[in-house]
Length: 298
Image 1: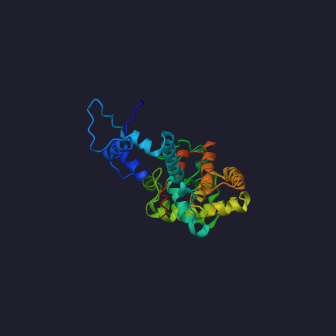
Image 2 (image 1 turned 90 degrees about the horizontal axis):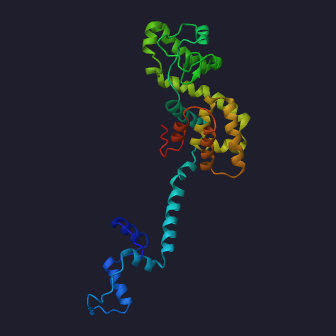
């Protein structure tokens, strides 16, 4: 006979699962009685029937091993199906009321700090000088950048919030002088006392991009779904940094999924898959944040 190994913790789990209250010895004794033995009968050792193992008795009680396996598999399926149900959770309030906290999370998790290094374009566009202690790395033709906002390539100062954003940074240059400024505002510096003000302004700057892209590329139903789910909203908040082309592609994919009747959870998983099909950076980090059970939006 095939042997089964079962631990004490397994026994307790199975007992609880099937509401079994008998001990193993009680079950074995009941089996003897069912087989016709009387409690007072004391057969010789050579005649004494072998006590069934706990697992065999349990299988007898359940009816068959296949039933046991089906029940265990069903429990596993039920548990796994509910493990990520939080991805379907709706959030209340208008998009304007939640945009700031969602987008500050995007900045904290996905966007870098300050850079003002020497590239040909930055040298030609900078009005107050560059920081020679900042590495060029992969910045290529970038210009002065903070929280992923490229000052001249992104035409950030076309909005009042954009003007104020870089005015705050320029005021530090004037106050400290460029040498001291560059020593304080090192590569990836996040603004010190100005950090929260700069993040708030950055979020407002990107809200203009989001509104424009959402109007152009969302179906009415997709917009409703995105703005009622903080995780989906975070995906498209970050897409506002990625640029209009990526925003359009991501929206096109989810518009199709909405038409197919997909849930928010399924939309989010598709959004993550869509990012994986690009060459955008931080794909794994974005996926981890979007699916974290504790989104922790302050």
